[in-house]
Length: 172
Image (cartoon, rainbow, N blue to C red; front, side, top):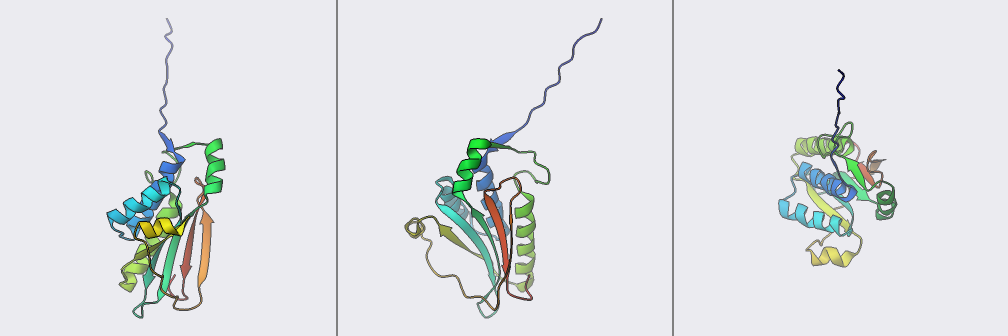
C-alpha cells in the first residue's frame, strides 16, 4: 500500500516598511548612534517623514572626510508596496534582516571611521524640516575636507532605497 506524503514549506515574510526600518536601524548601529536617536528615526520612517540619513566622520580639523547615507524614495515605495507588499526574510545574501548593501557600506564606514579615531555622527533629511526641528534635529553638517568622490547603488531587494558613499580623496 502507498501512502501519500505531504511536504510543507514555511516562508517568513514581513512588510516592506518593516524591512526599511530594519535597514535604517542596522545602518545607524554601524555608526554607534544612540538608541533614542535610532528610535526617533525609526518613528520617522514609519510615518514616512524621513528622506535620508547619513553617518559621517570628521578629521582632526573638524572637516568631513567620509559619509555614507541611506535614502528612501517614498513614491517608489508606494508603487512597490502595491506590487509586492511583503518580502521574504530569507533573501540571498542577507544576514537576518540586514541587506548586503547596508552591511558592506556600514562595515566599511565603521572600519574607516575607527582607523581615523573619529566618533561617527549622523544627520537626517526630513520630508518636512519642521518635523525634524520638533524632534530636536537641528544644526549644520561640517564642511568637506576637499573634493568629494561619490558612489551609490540601489538596494537590490528594496529598490526604493539607495546607499551612497562619499569621501574626500585618500579616505575611502
